[in-house]
Image 1: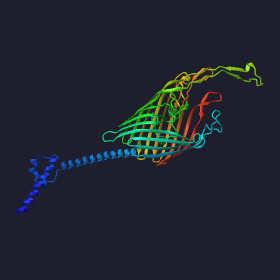
Image 2 (image 1 turned 90 degrees about the horizontal axis):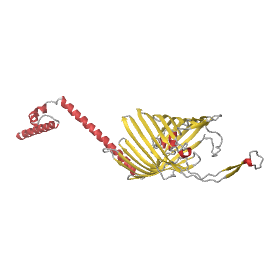
Image 3 (image 1 turned 90 degrees about the vertical axis):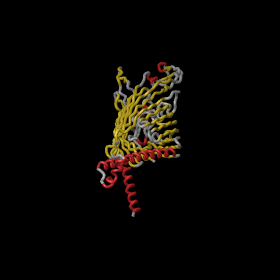
Image 4 (image 1 turned 180 degrees about the vertical axis):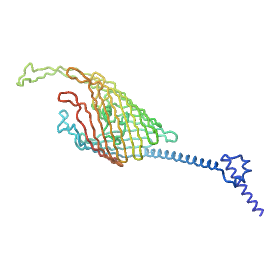
Length: 473
């Protein structure tokens, strides 16, 4: 009996000591006071304030566990992205088939200068892209080719890059560094560097087609991303692949164009995001010289009698050769985009972009200030709104581009200011799921190249209705 009583007393003392230690850890009374009050604490119910403290501590622990889980998921995502970069080779692509159902400018005739058909209402392959990407331990290389039937069957190289990527996992900060060399997208503005297959509208704005025709140019680029800050600097040939001057994809002078972009990309709330930036382009253009010519003797049979008469002879004097020359060109642009989730399946996007340039037009009306004797000031802008609901998308965009803000037109004996602006109002309706999409777009085009029967400038009718089917793979 004595041994049993001693065991019971020992268990009671151990239980009292354990409760005293627990209360001490919870911020209770001093150890000595707890030892005296141990028998009472073992029998009396705990106060309500103590329950609230325990509940608060449990909530804090749950929040800590949730934060650690989110942190772990972020690390896992970074590791998955890193694993993708370590994969050896991936093949992807997409095909776009266009049905140009209506074109106001089409006619069943040929262009007298180029002998190309003037009819554009047809079915054709707009783009058939095939891309390969190779990556291993931060080193990467890619190549993309394009096939189309825009001007008959054609196959060409679109892009070819090699580069280095460095990513710091988001333990504390997110830092991304990229270096690329080769034929790549021009990092100016928001529209030109964007992926072609992700664009809602079928074609680019007049501003992008004029200043950066073809989107691609050869050069080297350095990109940096840190938290919400985005930046890139590129040194490029300055002759995009879609240039009309005859030197597309090459560089006729020793100078290079420098393209910079600085922007931000941040979430302003749980369901809204803002992207904005400014871009700069400054470089050197090329004016081709002319070859020397000899004197020419020309006979024009004015009276059509088949006999040479002195009054029908004309001497055209020869001209000396002129050397080629360079000229300065530059541009500054700004862009902004706002994206918001209005409902669980409804997304709104509003975007705008504008640019001022001098002597930079290379795709619509190529600028040559040496030939015109003055600088050509260009200006363009675009605003758009897109709303997506489940698999449906609707969008509207207005863009305008003026290739010569100082243009003048000769009317009689008077020079009057002339508005040479091009404009397009595009309305898009589309639907798609997974990798297949179908889009219909109507373009109301304002083309200033028209002339009335009296010779005065007017708008050339050029509205179009196009259906596009796209499949990505």
